[in-house]
Image (cartoon, rainbow, N blue to C red; front, side, top):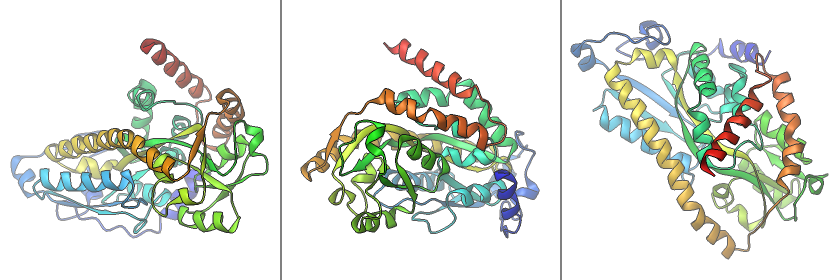
Length: 357
């Protein structure tokens, strides 16, 4: 139902495509194939790609997005022009995914559960209480189940360029001492537009109130909500949220990650020489963001501590148990979800932890 609605809404979109002097979709090879291109074709090739997401200049996703656009433009010597639009200037979230699915010359950076309307298992990959480190997440992204999911996304015309655009873990930020799910009873917290994030907060015991983050700060000041769930970089970032909320309960319930993507048909329409540039820049910038954010987190926490922010440990087993029904909801909500996938992922991560012990 959700997938059908997304396709119906998108059918009215006007698509403007300019690959190789015409439409990328009309000249594209079938998804998964590699078009033959002569040296002359490569020399004459040019494509303009719009790259959109919601992030602000202070955020690592914005910095990595700028870096990616600049890197592709320089390395392709003008054969690929990526123009980056941050701060929600163009389509974001589900609308960004729709742009790619319908063949626009488009690149997006969005949370993986937004692809669940096309391949339901994507929501399981970023479900609550699954990962505890970036290394665990990266390991799973290279696993066979995830490669299979990427292949199925390609059949839906979604090409995943990279999965490393992570910026820490999301915890609960309020002015309360929260150590267990019962402490959240009746507590209103800002939620993102993601249904998965909303369900996670509700399972943990809170009252989820979806709104944009720019609205969140005024809502906290007005007493509409008592805080939010987010990463260290969010708390330290634009608008100085740390001036309003001072206590962080270290639930680390969701990994803060985004996937870089574009349309599979548009990707396949690009000569291999330039696809390689896209691929290498995507991975390089994703890893740069992940590493840079992890290195910067200590500085951010020091700054936050100086401004009165404190952190407390929580009963992780209790929160894990509380969040278990979210995976049942995913199976019910999205078409074709493998009901055993969550346990398969848990087993893979346990094996990985054992190998590192």
